[in-house]
Image (tube, rainbow, N blue to C red; front, side, top):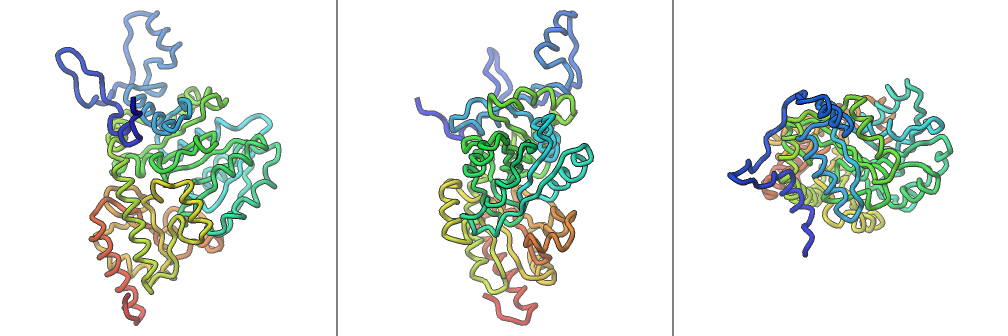
Length: 414
């Protein structure tokens, strides 16, 4: 029998079983904060099963979303990864990292560029609790051969995990996940891969050797800008998988049932949305690359033949919905924003319609200006989250906007 593909798995996720006399085609959210029990024995059985009749410890709506995400991340043959969905992407990272820390392994290595909030969590609250953070800045995105040269030197016996992004935020470099996981496994260090920009429709890091995958469900997976949530998936058999449920309940970082209901609704169309957005982002990257208003185009695979080969190997189904343009300075970035009235300026990403953000003012505002500059995150950088609009409309709007930037500089448009 043919095995359903990831898009089919997602589209059918969470559907209730038919019942005599009929059943809802869509399961309603289970909103009760607590359950009532007929007897002490029933209560004890629920507690022993880890459910406990209390929403913080488990919920049917949350469970349906977790089953769907586990099926997607394990689609390529990975055995039933443990999954917990959380109240935010930050909560997912917190749950993942705390589950990997040990009595003797108290260090975390962060590979940058990465989302600014990741560094803020590791260098802020977790550092105050005794977690030692080491930061390794990766070379420019096109330099694949030497991408991980600085990592091995920091993988000492005190390191619990390396945290990295499959597609980096905001410059969209592609991480050589198999090489990193091999390196970490040899040192006895876990790998935590943030696959938010890629989603399991484009890359599944557990298949590539990662121990833990985290997602911000707020982004493409939920996809409608009406949910805040995260997810942690841990390889079956890893010690952190056994602690995941208990840690999530103890920390109190679980997702609400209504958010889980909305996220599952979004997940059912995510395969289509990711494919459409990924295709359109690639077209827009070509348009931007040919326009004189643009100093640099950041899109996975564009910067060298080696990076293109890595993209072809790790991202054969598409390069994702993100596109980052460097206009050179804040004035040019402002002119482009003003010339794109239908593309909303927003601090996040993953909506069904295209949005744009200014990383220096949003996702990476917590870094010092000199630190941002060293990472290539200048005031002229704009990060686009490409939506599902008709690509011809997006191309026309981008060209008009870039022409307006050139007119503001006193030059001709492209």
